[in-house]
Length: 504
Image (cartoon, rainbow, N blue to C red; front, top):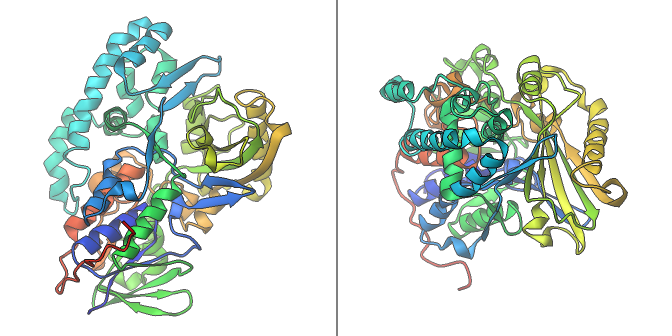
């Protein structure tokens, strides 16, 4: 048997790529730098609490199901997804709230209370979102964008759909009330984008959520990682942790091996990187092998924002708090300007509060609630000294929650920890501490994004947030579907094991 396809990184993109490559008959090995698989979807366990480090919103669940059915397995044997209702509870600073849900009549009933004149506008906005979804997702999300002709082919559709407008500008054509504009434009933040700059094609997220719903896995997002790792084990794919790859070996223009931090050289029939392509090109491939992705070209890429995420557990429960809550601050455009343009740490913030114990109490000790609170912050191009700022910033957020959404929180805290841009830059090796890879701007989307097949090195491929189609679980999982189309079939296919490794 020849050398395996080596997948570098075991985030959802890497795990999905490994399954799809194995289904095509490739021998596959997955190498993970950290002490557990999952990448951004790793898990922190502390004082009896289970905290998902990263993704907490599962949309388009069919993409997970596909991976198991592709190799003849029933996904229900590996994980359980629970619907979340409301998808998000959006709370404004004046105390009013909006439950973001799938049912249009429930949405319209809430719009009627806030701004009756926007009901018809929302109907037209939803129709526009579906129109964009039918092109931007259905036709393009898993289509390769290797060649400029791939991009030129879809330009007329993008022009017709007004992809030159931002998400905020598009929504503002239909919705007049500023609070409702915020409700229907915050979604790009979930993939690292500024609603005032992200192209309106990302409005498809609204219809995607309405079409398939929002879910949370029983046992936390980490249970999806464990299910995929178990599936790979059954398919004879090794997932090696604590194995950071330091160099991709290129000979005669082709990736032929990887070298790990311990000096081990592992031959490869091809290399798939579920890692930040900016890091891979600049740090892992010698400059002589890079004609397009030179150090200068990589430095010109615009990374997404970063995140501050605080994890905490407390005695008692806050039963009025939803699973997903968006706590909007006093500013919207101004705050986003501070994060994306000025790159300064603002004195105010908007927060995403995740309360997984509402759906799965087993994630905390009995009689306790577990949370994480997320604040978008500028990436490391800001120069913020997080070693100095982190604990004070967390204290300030906890004060806000104690005085608002979670009264009495501080006196009942049991455990706390946090991550900030240092985690993304260090543990996850994301350039500039970006939390979502490249920012999803118009000129960093589709063909303009990092290609799934390297233009510089044969046999080198990319999946994950910075490749087409982009960040977020649907984007990352679909990048593995794109990969499936651009990787050549193996010369000598390795048959899938006939045995069922699971107990029936």
